[in-house]
Length: 195
View 1 (tube, rainbow, N blue to C red):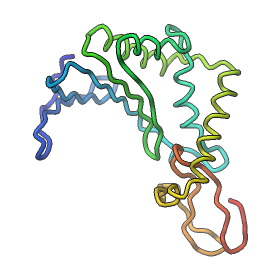
View 2 (view 1 turned 90 degrees about the vertical axis):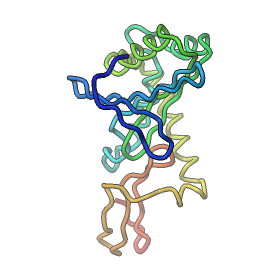
View 3 (view 1 turned 60 degrees about the vertical axis):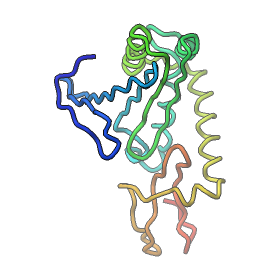
């Protein structure tokens, strides 16, 4: 990949970052490291749980899941099988301000091209069958409930841009929380009101 943008050295680590913005607005950051023959790709989309509205939460996380259910040119499951055959892995996460898809595999131009083509195809041409949507809705709901019932999730939840003050008690409440831990409409502590 050839980038004509600026080259920056970051912090005390001193690794190079080649940064450029493509004509379509996509920001590309490449950090070559030839210490091992491995490629790591991390694609970030600036959409997360903070972009959801109360009562319709979990959609960013759900979309993260259904992206893996196939597209116009890559049938469901083929992305995992193809990467595993190339010695690689892939996964995704969703948070307040982003959804990211990541993979690592043996350095190979063909595999890199295939992975980037698959990501582009999945973003534009995802195939979402009703049965897959129903399955993934259950998976996401279970993941969210695990987060809600986890003692650690209370300490990781931070107020986001969608935080509001409760009309009943004046406390700060969240209408959304990280989709990877939980998403809920909070109850007012003083009156049990649901927002």
